[in-house]
Length: 392
Image (tube, rainbow, N blue to C red; front, side, top):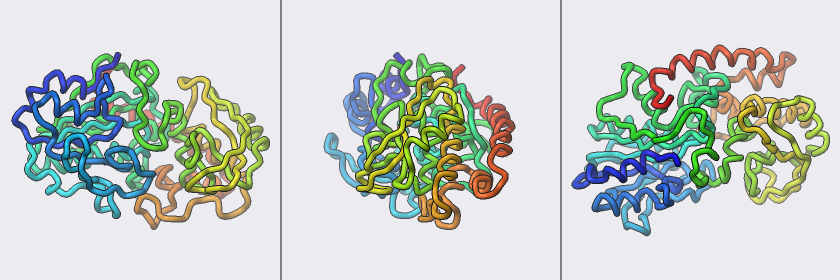
């Protein structure tokens, strides 16, 4: 079985004795025997963290996307919980005073291997602020569920940075959270900053997908209930930038998609003709209970991945969007409401990391040239990330 950074820190818990430390974590931050991180640390180190910090969705993973979390107290330990996702963009980067009185910040968040997933930004920005305030930072590493070999998609372009595109990475970056923090905090100087320690995984290899880790899947956020969700998420999260439901409000978010105006059989046929490796599209109807088209019957498909290794998840999402765009009535396809506190750029451009995809759909050129350009971005990022890799 894979041993995480948390498992390893618990073996060396005497290093925490007498130290006043904070913990940035969430409900998926558990030990190999499924004890919550803060409870296990309290039992092993002689005392609980002085403060707990929660990312988007809250420390217990209660809130839906883009819903602020409030400060509260932990029922196990009585320790205060401070939210790092509030009512404005300014709350996304913690103030230095958040770490006042601490010696050390521990970061233990389960990421899912996609550029959009916001925990990497929260972890990196919290670590950066804590280090600047003179605190030590330990990142307790966890596996990338999608493995570390595949790099897929365009690098996020300048001017398209946001909470869902904090770093200039491809959509599938193939990094663990510890590697991301090292890369982003060491970019300018070429070396990891003093005071930063990554407690590495034991037994994890870059070819390892989540089912091979031997650990149960604990949903890291409300709409990431299974490994199957994480597999399709790099491509189908793009649906958040459209009027098409990505399955939020159902028991299969991101594995089902559709809208009231779509015909399931027609959509499934169009997608089957694209011959995307490793996946099938099952025609279906569903009724979201909240968010897009709540209460309405949507025609769509269930995305069934038969071979996660062969499945090009980001390209598949682009292909799905292209088919949906062609089958949808003119106008009104893209989400226009503010997205993760950004109002001046379309949500789809923030997710794609550029405007080339949207303009390709809207014009006559299509996206073939843009997709072809990914190879250069992928190669450049592989070279950039190489010095920061912690695992073979």
